[in-house]
Image 1 (tube, helix red, strand yellow):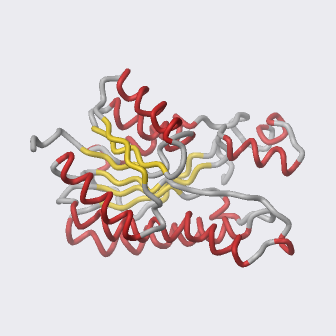
Image 2 (cartoon, one colour; image 1 turned 180 degrees about the vertical axis):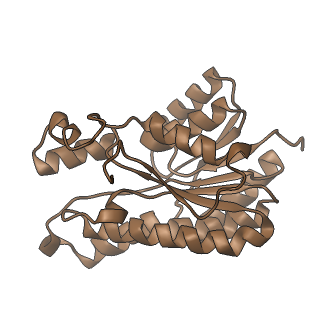
Length: 248
């Protein structure tokens, strides 16, 4: 096995923000493990984009809320690259619903995908990370201000922020940094779902953002790329807001 330069494992990397993160890291010299849960077709699109920019990649299908599958993925990733230098816990799920229509299954599934997955992946993957590695968790503005149409999602993303701070303290002794990126409104399938449920147009949401636009997935990818670089070597336990000023 030949050690590749730098290895980044990105969960939920088959589309949207995850794809953008994979491409941003790929463009900065990382080889990428493209994790996906369902669509191999979409994951291959991510892989094709990585190939176009000259980045090596490995597709890996795994349910990141399933410890056995995550453990096997971590071992495979380590064997493929010789190390895991960056973990990005990006996999997420959002379904907006009237509060009184939320079921126990809705609650449990949302917490599993958005919170438990980060716990499981951090536990299993960090075993294969050496000094000066980093972990970035993708939270949400909803986890900071709450969301009336998705309290279960907001609860999970809010907990992910405090989980980030806790693991930053826990892993500091190994010199592994842990941070969170908290997106505002970003142009993805998830944002399209929000518009549909709220019966709004993009311009309606953009008008509430100080920078007067909806963010791009690449805005999040660039933030993660920075946090994964040596330029962020003294940053840990922080939440980087990428929301166009929505929390000013």
